[in-house]
Image (tube, rainbow, N blue to C red; front, side, top):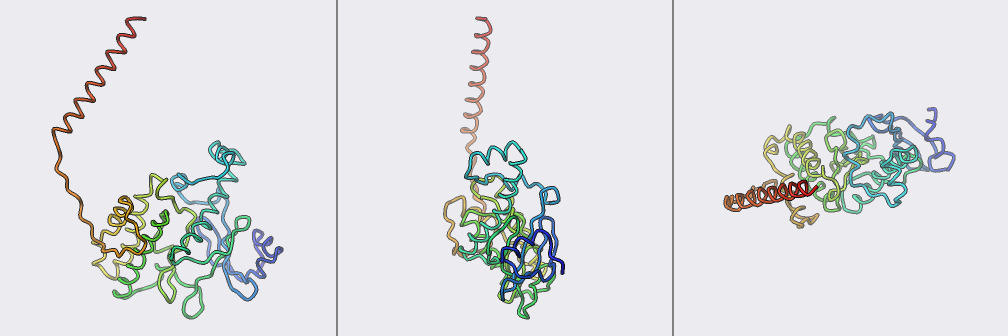
Length: 285
């Protein structure tokens, strides 16, 4: 096939020997199957921001750290340089997440580096050596669904243990190889401690995956893994190997009405004092 323009520099540098075929084109990137020496890998070519249709990107970028203060200021101002830096930050987020999650024992494709907006990584294949299917393209037995759902919940826990929430997890960005599910598509991964949207993103991730597996094992629909995992995170008890149960008991606290009334009265008194001070200042003028 004709070599895509964005992949030509990698061929010139000897990082890729041949582009074999396009694999897929999504909302944020186009992916190609490539040959690197004797290895078959995939090359993810990120689309420019103007072409990318990923919604609410600002929510995902909240809390991302930029080492250079100059770069951070440029990104805030939205200058052309700042937009370039924002794009680089978006792309590097996936590379960084892949390395971090791989080290943490989460099943993700092995990354081989990012070069001018092109991510080289492992091609996930099935038992026949063909490209592994996405979850939405396969059928599972109830036993497989229970087993793989448990694996996915443990991986969500391991991700959070290293400070990350996927942010867009569903049956469309999980592949299925011979060993089970493999998580892909991580440029929108968020910092759990720094992003104010992290909890609801994690809840949505868990709900999406649970809804998928519940098609084959309906009892999974009543599990409460998101609440259980986030409670461990908030309590500082997040061990990546903690066995999860899928159950969560809401803590019921008796409301101290007297304390609530005291708070209201204190706030009212403070407001009255503030008004009195303002009136006195106005009278002096």
